[in-house]
Length: 465
Ligand SMILES: Cc1cc2nc3c(=O)[nH]c(=O)nc-3n(C[C@H](O)[C@H](O)[C@H](O)COP(=O)(O)OP(=O)(O)OC[C@H]3O[C@@H](n4cnc5c(N)ncnc54)[C@H](O)[C@@H]3O)c2cc1C
Image 1 (cartoon, rainbow, N blue to C red):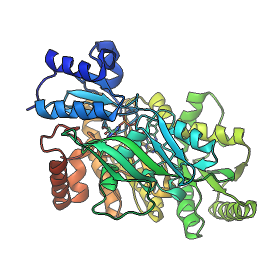
Image 2 (image 1 turned 90 degrees about the horizontal axis):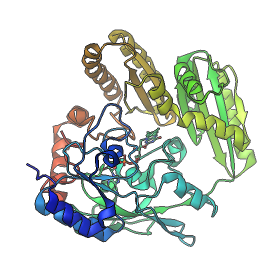
Image 3 (image 1 turned 90 degrees about the vertical axis):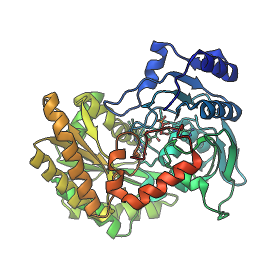
Image 4 (image 1 turned 180 degrees about the horizontal axis):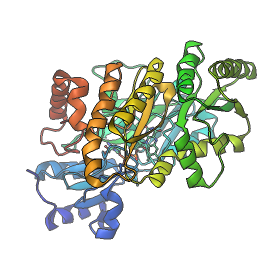
């Protein structure tokens, strides 16, 4: 149903963005054939690097008229294939729209373009004593545009929430090229349906986001990190729900099991403390008053030790904290290094159900005779369940992944959970959307898509089955 990108279309694209921003050459296209989803690749016909909203608008008008698919792309760090051109067409890269336009100290707001790297935004606002909390582990490579489109979270979501809790306004381009603004530098705004919130997590299927306004917080003055090893997997999981029951909300509660700790060691060639412990929790507490931090730390340590923790290691200084978090941020790379063919899930359950979820994963692994590694943002009820191919032959691997995925989803759904907390549906989970949401909701979503994109040119074959 789609038209191919021919020489005439290429000439029009060059006229809009300049020849140097239109890539058709094989080698230069390669980085755009995939994101970070293992095993998913597709060739775009052309990559176009945009620098202004007007260019985005003109490209969308052209694509809509000619019926050419357009896939928005930011950092290419996605884990569900959202930025992969599975139907060919144009990859519209916002990587050059990377300016922090304004830090508004009076309103505690920042205005950015979608190609700003998330870590750069952190550093820029922190230099002013301000704080943008969402911190996906990929923060030094992913961009704000991708964070908005995926509704990205990160370790600090336990206390501070996710991208959707900070976006107050945005500018976006519809598939027909029309530009609109939703929200603004407003802390409160209920004027009509919230198209702002609808676009967050829409995975580039409804509009191309070209500008975003985020609210900021004052930067917390103090922070401490705890590394807590356990010789029992279940006890570590139970600690997570027990901490919340004690009404302490740490900034982050991350979980990783032994094999993952050792995979990180292998990658970084740095020895990890308590490397043989069955599981470890990495817990952050932040705030502005030492007494409050000490009180929270005491309660958390007590809960950990009551649950059989082997130790509670306290990292107060920056270098020690950075070392612990460096390993945590490298987990996905370490897993890919240890087992290059794997399949990662992103299920979420009410956080009190984390022990049952992790126990269930052990049973699923045993039933299907596969290895499963677990890690993730357990303080949010979010676990990245990863199925490993190991030395299974190709046919066995292809046959085993779908039933294991279904078992994982069924377990999470039976606990009141969902398929994905932060990585999105994208290209890799769309066939399971109806299982998760039911036909009524999926049909409502199809109608929303139709209203935004009647010609189905914007990121087709994503999210909706
Ligand atoms: C090592 C690693 C760790 C990770 N840790 C986390 C984590 O802790 N938390 C988390 O939430 N995710 C995590 N992720 C997943 C990923 O980094 C996030 O989904 C991130 O938000 C993707 O941003 P990106 O800029 O790379 O987006 P891309 O991969 O380029 O795109 C992602 C989606 O956004 C759409 N999109 C991009 N730009 C725009 C735009 N301007 N307008 C409209 N749509 C657009 C694309 O079409 C695509 O559907 C991790 C990934 C890796 C590789």
